[in-house]
Image 1 (tube, helix red, strand yellow):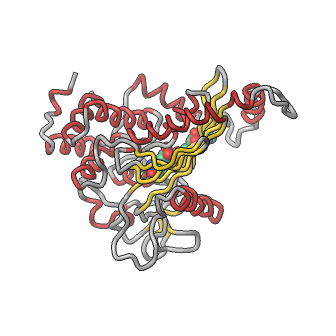
Image 2 (image 1 turned 90 degrees about the vertical axis):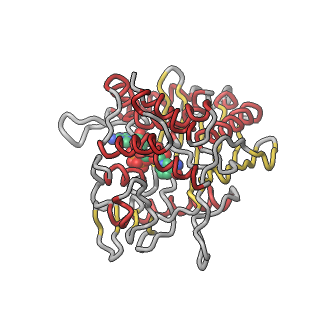
Image 3 (image 1 turned 135 degrees about the vertical axis):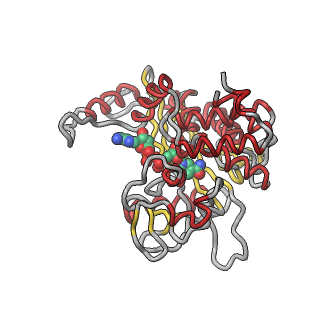
Length: 361
Ligand code: NAD
């Protein structure tokens, strides 16, 4: 039902049928993997962004520079679900030719869950690293500060392991992704302690200081509150968050979150600097401990997972494992969705002339 309803909503918002289906499928895919923050809860906001011209339906990537190991590409504010696929596919093709390739993506609409892009590359046999910033989005306070100076700037590494599930590390460099604050605001999973700093410097788990009065509306605007998200891991997480601005914002040419004395907030977009490594290009090279990437990885995974758990009966997990488990579970049980989030989707559908009942199968 959700795919059918979501497709109809995005078509009504201006996307061609194929793009509409891609957007909702990727959003639902984030829910399936447990990242409700980047799932269908985003429907009302995406639709609003399309109406406001912040994200533009049906855009094609524009190649600004095409060199053997490097492409600089402009997403032209297209929906990130479409633009992301196109950008990753360029990286895959180049890395297959060159062994290693870099793609600098600027001006993309929201590219959602970054793990999607690492998985797409890993499906093609590539290791990939993705550094992302969000120009024009001021959500996160720097370490030692209260004022917002950056966004949630995710970092992601993916690696295929022959015959095994991909390894995927994928996280926001804020303590939580903004969407997790949105989920908490809408009655979903509460935030961990210390995720938010209020305007007066109080550290809290209450998401409301991020949204201010807009928190009560169907389109809560995280630019409206007096508070900020906090980066994870004190000065270390802040350092990563800061360097995402440098790599994905400054180096790609997409632009950083903002600068002093600008009259207006910068136009929202994701910048993404991605590096792709073809494992086949490494084949046959002597390695110190093992001549097989996969067997070395598997040995190490077994070593890590054998660590004594902190909790009796607990278990050590590796990057990508929680998502994989939830996906198996949720593929059976369906997506849990807070009532308010569902009602907001229905309201958005009706506002776009889509009758939800006709999508209940
Ligand atoms: P998170 O805090 O849930 O961390 C997820 C990562 O930690 C995954 O790699 C997961 O496998 C690993 N992990 C989780 N629990 C684990 C455990 N117990 N043991 C070992 N590893 C574990 O993620 P987040 O920071 O809330 O980010 C959520 C999503 O938001 C990500 O997909 C990210 O790409 C996305 N995001 C996108 C944007 C954007 O602008 N497009 C911005 C911010 C975040």
